[in-house]
Length: 318
Image 1 (cartoon, helix red, strand yellow):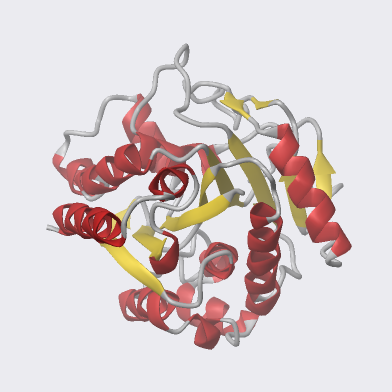
Image 2 (image 1 turned 45 degrees about the vertical axis):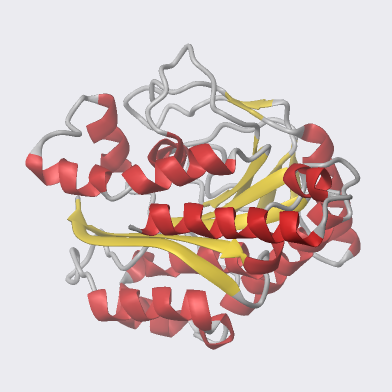
């Protein structure tokens, strides 16, 4: 049985991708951003997910004002990087997982979530930047460490989905994953935000107090976040702050109680607050492949394994 082992929240600032592509990661301005993800990459190498579901928003790359799906699920075998006006980013083509993606589509649609099924889809910085931040820089002719399933959410054209709708979709995705028969370790990304506004009189707005409270509640009290109306995101986090509802899809896909493994926050990167968090399912550590190996072991052996796992988490936190 497949399991979601953890959720990852990350901003997807396009300038971060440009800094990486142009070799600017060691410059003082950018080094503080990239250094904040070093422990995350270590965590990802240890987690070794079999599949990553990446929730992001398209920036007029795969879709335009002529067609705007609220939720679009990538079911293709591969997802090439899009040309966003200056050529595609020099990153590998992302390989999909059509069997699991199709299973998620069927399960969620039968649970009355009307997903748009995409059998051909290009991905932009909204997806590739968080993947770089968690998996590291990978050359164009290389390979991402695991297959991905993109889930594009409309947070560009009004009306976007509510936080509650996103949270409940996360729960439906979790149900779908757990009903998939193959033994897979799955991580889910929620991307975008945090507070920022890129145009108008409030261009450059960043509300660190709001952002940090959002991260606190994401970890401990997500039910409070699902009640936030669109107008509050606009007022407190800027016109583009609505992207934060995508983090609620990730959170909805996890257990009610999770363990916060790591958090990073800095401002600004370009004109955006960079937020990042890793949340693990407490009861599901070692689920999937590692859990199957534990079957038949004595209770002391299982306890020893759990203690080792906790020690590993502590090393990541330190």
